Image (cartoon, rainbow, N blue to C red; front, side):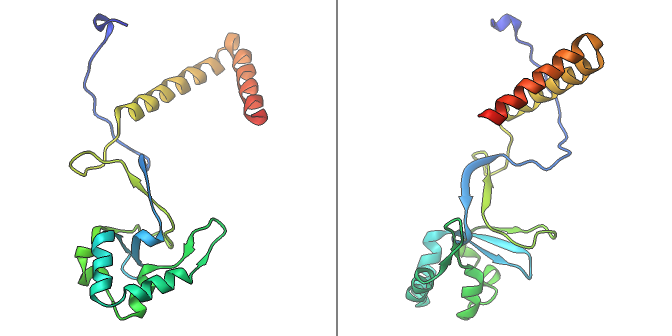
Length: 175
C-alpha cells in the first residue's frame, strides 16, 4: 500500500463496556496490602516496605511468617500483608504510611476478594491508554461481525458461512 492510498481521519470513541489492556505485570498478594473494610488496595513499593519493616524491627517476623505460610493449588502463598500488619500493631497502614505504596486505589464495592491484580498499560505520564494495535483489532472485529451478520441474511452466502463456522469449530476442537 502506498502513502497515496492511506486515508487519515479523526474520531472520538466512547467505551461502553469494561476494558482492560494489560502490560503483562501482575501483582500477587505479596505485592499489595488490601484493606477490606475501607475497600482500598495499596501497591507496595518493595524498597520502602522492607526499609519500613527493618526500621520497625518487623523484618525477621515477616520473613518467618512468609517462610512458614501455606500455599494454594496454584503455588501462590496464602498470606495477606494487611492481616499480618494489623496483627503486629500496624493498623490503618494505608493511611498512616502512604509512602510505602506506589499507588493506593479504591476497590469496586462489588468485589469481595482480590487475588492477582493485572496492571493496566500506561503511557509515560502514568495514564492508562489503549494502544493503536488494540483499536485496530477492535475495529477489525466489528467489521468482520458486521460482514458475518450481513452474510447470514443473504441466502447465497448463508450456507457458506455455516460451513466456515463448522470448519473453525472442528479446528478448535482438534487442536
